Length: 99
Ligand SMILES: [Zn+2]
Ligand SMILES: [Zn+2]
Image 1: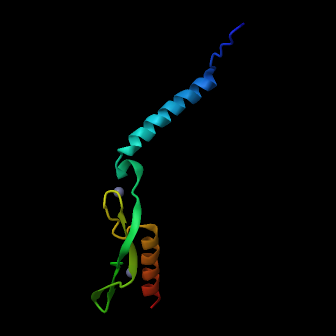
Image 2: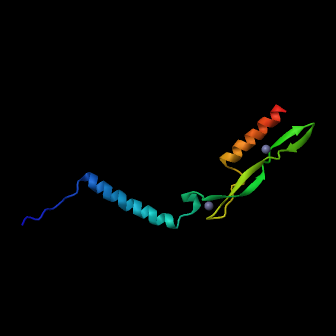
Image 3: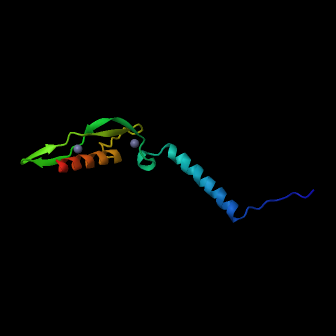
């Protein structure tokens, strides 16, 4: 009738501990803020790039449009500070230097 007893080894214990830790983190993430979890950006429109350069002694502003995102969770806004905006602003600068 010998009952078998399985005594977990170090690896099995580590797996169990990691699973408990993951469950705790997932529980925590439900109430977490964007600072901890990252914003959930969605496109809300475009904004002027705000590039500036001097032309004939006057300050001129760029007119290219960069995408602006709003977080659907906390309603924070990135004001065009995103990789696509960076690319468009650098294009804008290149174009001005070329002219
Ligand atoms: Zn957010
Ligand atoms: Zn620009």
